[in-house]
Image 1 (cartoon, one colour):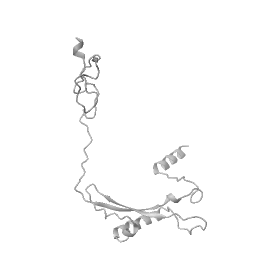
Image 2 (tube, rainbow, N blue to C red):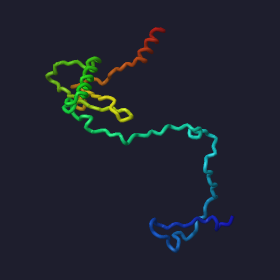
Image 3 (cartoon, helix red, strand yellow):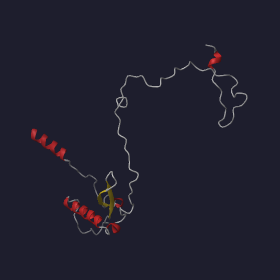
Image 4 (tube, rainbow, N blue to C red):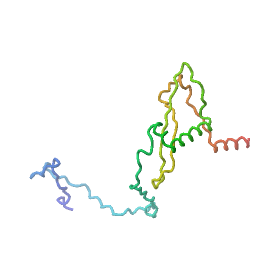
Length: 173
């Protein structure tokens, strides 16, 4: 193959400036060995999910759904004005009492008392309709100091499969 066919075209030295009449490089740069053009479709034998016709369904969101920002209160005083939020708050307090999450005691005289706040969330169905009103009472933990408000951070949580496994091991020994 003659060398003149392998010379690459010369581009302008700087972008957005028209090409000069004389090239920036006086000597032409020959191309290395020509590369074969890749086929349009891969020819490897791997079977992918797309080739097999398996694809995830496309999620289509309903952009016409309208939710009002006034549905979810930003403070407990706003929530107390609406009966469905009062019911959600009462259900949360009852769940905390039922689970014995905390017990009410008089505040210690020499230690600060941590505050708490209510968080509210309106849970929606995929259709945009209200599923339920969720209220949570959370502690303001950013005021805690080690040794004053707490001494350890371990909180054991046992799930039923773990308990079943331990009982099964104990029975077989």
